Amino acid sequence: MAGPTLPRVRALRYVTPLREGGSLPAVMEADDCGTYVVKFRGAGQGVKVLVAEIVTTEIARTLGIPTPELAIVFLDDAMTKYERDEEVQDLLRASVGTNLGSDFLPGSFGYDGSTPPAADLAARIVWLDAYTLNVDRTWANPNLVVWHGRTHAIDHGASLWFHHAWARKAPQRAAFATRPFDATTHVLADVAAPVEDVGSALAARLTDDVLGGILDLVPDEWLEPTADLVDPAAVREEYLGHLTARRDAAPVWVRSLT
Ligand SMILES: Nc1ncnc2c1ncn2[C@@H]1O[C@H](COP(=O)(O)OP(=O)(O)OP(=O)(O)O)[C@@H](O)[C@H]1O
Ligand SMILES: [Mg+2]
Image (cartoon, rainbow, N blue to C red; front, side):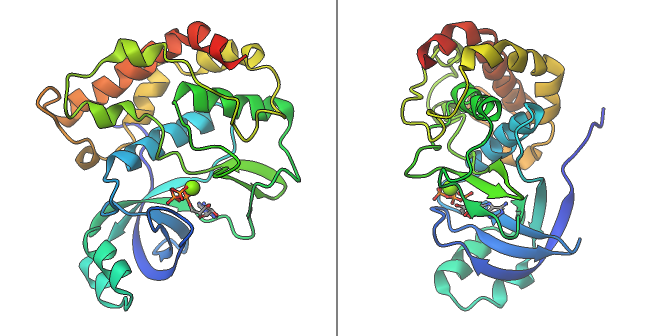
């Protein structure tokens, strides 16, 4: 069965590195006349952070949280020859093939609290981060940008960190499902409506079918097999198992947010 997929584009020009980004993402132009912030498969964190980026970003979109459109950005070998900076050249060389693009939001600025989102949107973002265990949304690193006056969520590579452990040991869904989340340092802690008021409506949107459709957006080659998870289908199934178990346990972990 072939469901929706992410657009696939070809990178045409490396515009500039985004040096504030830990993984050295870059602004690139592509053959659909689009401009993207590209996260590279060859960056030190590996492809798992790209999987987290797709899955959590698309969960955010499902929950009505503004977030840039994603695309798979293909980098061909020729692109690596024009770059003079050695660090960038090494990164591009290690990234020939599929990478992840986030539609570049021109004129957006980093969240500084001057134009806070509505209390309901803020609560949805806190719930998203608690659900996906994304610790990367603090004042030190807000990972929110304001564009056309609306708060957009970006940078979800640090979420779903349970997948970093499953290469070493058999995946453990139960521990992840009920794990508490400390929202006291969340950048939106002071402006969010009570999360328990929005939680059940949000969980209801994430049906098994919706979550399965989101996992289908991840390219097979980014779903690294392990001794227990022998092929991309098994890896997808494991993500789905974790995500449905934590969704169903929401009444337990939501208590840790208050
Ligand atoms: N779609 C976008 N449109 C405009 N600017 C963006 C977009 N995505 C990211 N940026 C800008 O690029 C910066 C780096 O992006 P991002 O946070 O996703 O990268 P990162 O390498 O994961 O960063 P870090 O690990 O340092 O948080 C952001 O802080 C933001 O200023
Ligand atoms: Mg960031």
